[in-house]
Image 1 (cartoon, rainbow, N blue to C red):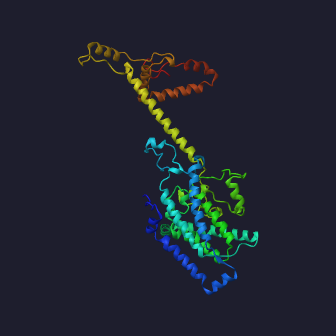
Image 2: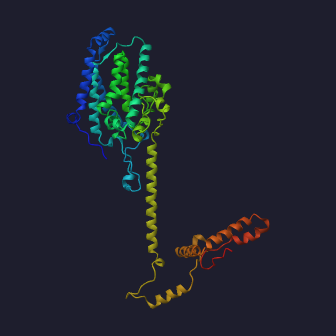
Image 3: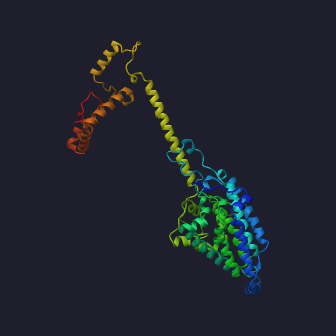
Length: 445
């Protein structure tokens, strides 16, 4: 069953999906109300914590711009050798599929369907981040040690929080339908799939974590780094391509090497790759974590995912098989057409009056009375008639069971060739002439 079409502009989207309006409004109002409680206000004042304010607006603008930027990059620069799974229908290569469609080039990123609707939902989801306008954060970290400590704590907790909530969302059917089903309508993800979510999913998997750490005293620079870098990372993980080996301009590094340097603290936990998350979208059960792989490995839900570029090799192999089969079919049809043109295979000629001529009948009777035989002595001299005679003879031998008998006799004689006393006997028996009615079925014996 196809997913319902998404609205193609924000006005229509908000009219259809009211939760993207009242949901963040309720979250912002609740957060603001909590900050005004006397004890909470005193705690915030003591730790010099202030709302993120206009930076929330800046982030939303950044996130929307980068979503379209990554999308444009994939349209222009993504190549099939980096593609993780095919964007074509799953039944494209099945036997009943249209042959012409099956040998067409793979669908490119730019040819994907329903991109506009996914982009509109992405923008609406990102705009819910305006909730952070009223969320209080601690001042900038006072040392690199403090920055790194908070960064590791936030990254590990967020990954674990995401893993548990995400896994339960897949395993509990009502929860999946209410929270996460929308995200999995796109089994072949692109960068707009990253925020192709319901608001309740976005709140549980992201905003709840931010609110918890914010009130715990999260420094604003740690939050800023995590959110900005994480947004770019999730676009790339949902792009459908592996850009890890892509050479960066100016820097003598690939994107994967730069990511490893910036996220070195995650090395002991294993980084999740686009191929692994793509597998989660394709197969549904596996790779639930957000950033690292250690929890999936620990709980048995890890899968390495597809090898980038293998889909292109599979596609080329399928095309080669289809083309080879088509060529073989055409050659067979051409051979049949040639055989149909050979006079000897067309049957006895008819008289002009439509009745068989006496001469033809006599010739036919004479032919039937004399057994046909293969006359060639070398394979290169064989004619079509010779092959037909031998084929008919083989059919007769098979019906009488003589083929099996003769093969057994030949096998015994080949075995006896190893015996010196029988070598002359074997050498005399090896020369067997053309098979046909000129020799009896038991000629080999």
